[in-house]
Amino acid sequence: MAEPTYEQLREENQRLKRRVAELERTVREQARQIAALKSLVERLQQELEKSQREAKRQAAPFSKGPPQAKARRPGRKAGPDYGRQNFRRPPDPAEIDETYEARLPECCPGCGGQMAETGVRQQYQVELPQKPIQRQFHVHLGRCTCCGLAVQGRHELMTSDALGAAGSQLGARVQALMVFLNKRLGLSQGKIAELFTRALGIPATRGGVMHVVLRSGRRLEPAYGKIRQRVRGSPFVVPDETGWRLGGRSAWLHACVGRDATCYEIAESRGAEVMAGLLGWDYRGTMIHDGWAPYDGFLEARHQQCLAHIFRRCRRLLDTARGGAVRLPRAVLDVFGQAIAVRDRFDAGEVCGHGRRVLAGRLRERLRRLVALVKSHAANERLAAHLESHLDDWFTFLRVDGVDATNWRAEQAIRPAVVNRKVWGGNRTGCGARAQSVLMSVLATCYQQGCDPLRLLTDTLRSRSPRISFAVER
Image 1 (cartoon, rainbow, N blue to C red):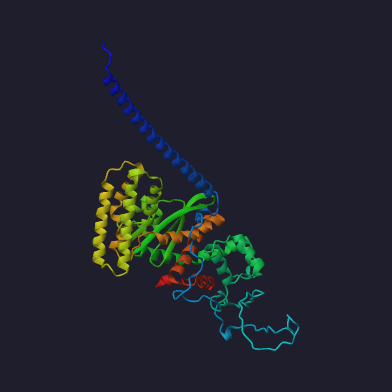
Image 2: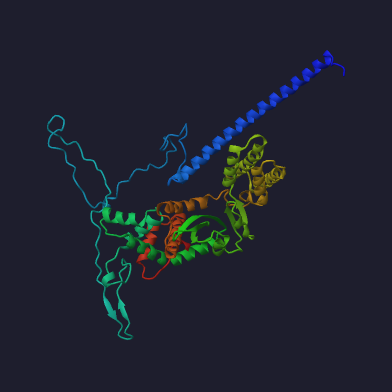
């Protein structure tokens, strides 16, 4: 066999050098990828551990994370846009119950010299009464001379006809405040009893507060029925649900916000049959909701998928996406960002209704082309499938007047319930769950319609028979 020549050896040597260089580049690229993956794994592990720690904290759902580096100064800003000055206004002279004199000292506290009065100014104070009002009702009893029916008198301030052992009761305003503290502000029944006993001088027990809440729920059942009818007839509804506890078992609290009424219902099921019982499967208005699949069962309704949920989903994908995987979430954010901009331009009078609908069609076509592209990233495939399955439901707010782009109304309605759940965990009995649904619905609707909830509760508790003193009768 002939010996290789010098030229052949040199070519072989150069080929080997090129091969070694290629291998070195491959090794460096793989090392870079390994380092990036290690960094990603470490960051995801830290985020997982952080989320696991926060899940064990009671305040975790309300935590906003570390403060911003350039946080805005707290409080109102000075200038012409300050708005109404929110200081306490002095009372009307007819409303003043007590007057006191804050006299000068006999001598100067600094040098001991004689004091000369130069004027008198006023200061006003609102204070809780030192002692609760104790009322006595002389209830006149009688009997019909014709049929013999026993009848007793009823004063407009009385809350019931009970006498004898049950003749000592709490007033309507006291009961209304108990209900408000429990169902709106989230105080537990034990804390409410302690507040009334220690701070207001009205002896109360946890069981007594519970009976007040249950009785108020029964009295407001007619109003609850009217609220359900009002929500069912609303041109749009915003449904949502959150976890609940009923007798120590898992349950669900459903909220449905209409144009001028809000209805809550606690049920053991999360299924769409709960919302169908409220709205009916043939509801023909517009439903603004998140991507929970059972809402798609309302085939007669128009749908608006919540854009806030898709914004959050795309941003989470961008936190972990690398390379070409960032293209789809970025493009989706751009499409929906332009949709929000079109809505704002319409509200500012820069775009007419026809132009808004035309732009909605163009954005829909752009989104359709985006989701039709082949995806190599599994998370992007799932995102594209979700967008495509609801392709006609993303821009309803640009085609129909009065429709929101997000389900913020339901999120706001769910928030007080979440506070209650964090404080006292849910309801122990079905009766308590029913009262919870009724009272939260009435209170939320009061705020929605600008009605005073304490006055409504007080009037209802004073009535002889359950009647609806409520704005839903309009």
